[in-house]
Amino acid sequence: MIRLLSKYLRMVLRLFFVRHGLSSFNAKGLIQGRTDESYLTEEGYYQAKLTGEILNQVNIDEIYSSPLVRASETAKTIEKHLNKNLEIQYDQNLLEVDLANWSGLKTTEIKEKFKSEYQIWKSNPENLSIKRDDESYYEPIKELFIQAKEFIDAITSKNSNCENKNILIIAHNAILRCLILHLINKPNKGFRKIKLDNASISILNLSKTNQSLKTQIECLNQTSHLNINIPKPIGDSRIILVRHGETDWNKEGRFQGQIDIPLNETGKNQAQKASNFLKSIDFNKAYSSSMSRPLETAKIILGKKSNLSILKIDELSEISHGLWEGKLEKEIKTTWPEMLNKWHQEPENVIMPEGESIEDVSKRSLNAWQNICKNQNKNDITLVVAHDAVNKTLICNILGLSYSQIWTIKQGNGGITVIDIFDNPDKDNVLSALNITTHLGNILDSTASGAL
Image (cartoon, rainbow, N blue to C red; front, side, top):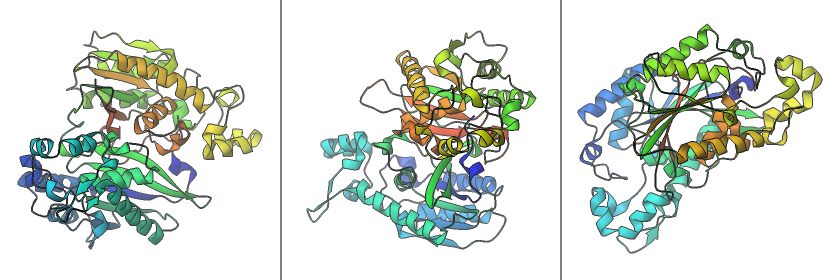
């Protein structure tokens, strides 16, 4: 039930991040970096066409692109399918990471020729240092973060009030990761914690409150417009994390918390659409909060034919709002105006009357999550259905964010998040997709704002 950031703020600058379509180097398994020898393949052009068609649902106001040919051709193809003519603005700060003499090599060749550097690249790329031909060293990802900051600073300076505007940004895997991570305060080792596929769409909302820039991730690595409902797995096992469907109290904007409100008809329909969207997934484990709305959502997703038992976990129950539960925000504002304002601005410093803190929720949710992960076996695909606050604290932890940053994460009713799990304890889990809601309508999350 965590309320949308944009619901509190009047003006939203929405950034659509798109990775270029499949390139010739992608198809051959070659490292690209900043080389411009890689070009868009036939499949890449088709992916760009599909991306343009889905983006035509929204009113794009500006387009920025990397000048490298694989990105610029993606941008031109997308622009042709939008509902108005726009000039593509090419920006050097959107160039891909400079990997020097790694470009054009296969991963196996890099492992052999640059063994120690490759290990750093895979485990902690922010600390990678590469030797140039002139024998000097540089740190490619740290330099890329500087590029990202300069680009975002320019965009936010031009749109200083974060006026309602949709900006499309077409670039490359590494620079897009750096742009996204910069906007969420660069969580430690965040580079390897997110995944961006060719022609995928990620949406971030930027708003100003008290002269401070606030970021909300609406979705990451959305690929359903490419007829790929969820990205291909990259780990040893996978967890599909879903927020329960809508309730009447979500629709009315009441603080719901631990009052056990059931799904309404819209919520049941959302769960059924999630089930249809995930019909190719053969779940072999399922968990749910012990409350009725996620449990019913999980049952609908699994379908009547499934004999899979759903393990109910109390620790995944929604945050307790205490005396706020059952009330509308305007009612709470009358009695607790200062506390409500602090909840919007500094949730980590609020304990609702007779309720819980977000730290409490994070601790119990993470304990449940860690136990679920410990029970993952090779190739498991596990369904977990829970709540807004619970899911947000879990996602914050996966990204390396503090629970104080819950407003950074969006979770729509029936929204689907994909986490790839690795058996190797030295490898971080990867957020392969966040808050997919295309099965519920269009590219934007149009689910109920609710209240939290």
